[in-house]
Picture 1: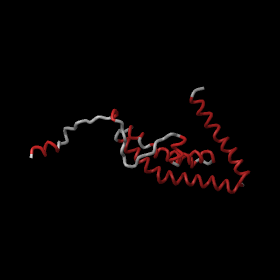
Picture 2: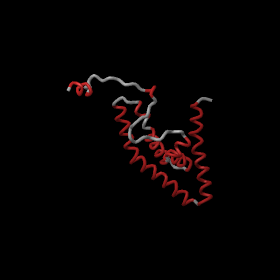
Picture 3: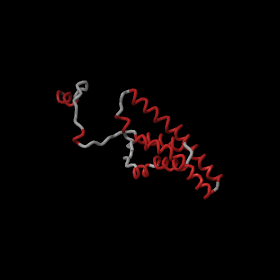
Picture 4: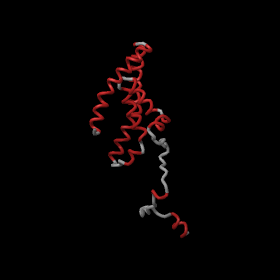
Amino acid sequence: MNVAKWVILAVLAVPILELATFIAVVATIGFGWALSLILAGSLCGALILRHAGSGHVARIRVKLDHGSFAALQTDAGGGFTLLAGILLLIPGFITDVVALVLLVGSLRRTFIGATPRQEDGVVDLAPEQWHQVHDPSLSDHRKDERRR
């Protein structure tokens, strides 16, 4: 079975599983509380997309305008936040649990294996992954100091 068939099967199965989960939650805590949880999750998703999502989309636009596709890979945390907001916006308990896994950094590292995002912009590379390139447009201050 190819990937497209699995994706179609998953897209068709998720609403059925969400409905079964909703019925189980209603049987456990009642319809009013279950509906309140669904609405609260959707509200949280809308807030996440409004606040965190708008900044991430702006960063993506700037990076794509400058042709920096590799820089998008280093900002995976923002992508996870966007995906979590979308999943929270979709009504259902299964999508809400997946969104919470994406939002909580330690859970994301446990389930997905994603590395923690560095806020200082520093990328650590092994010595064999980089080399120094001389930029002739920059003056060498050491030579200027030796001449004095």
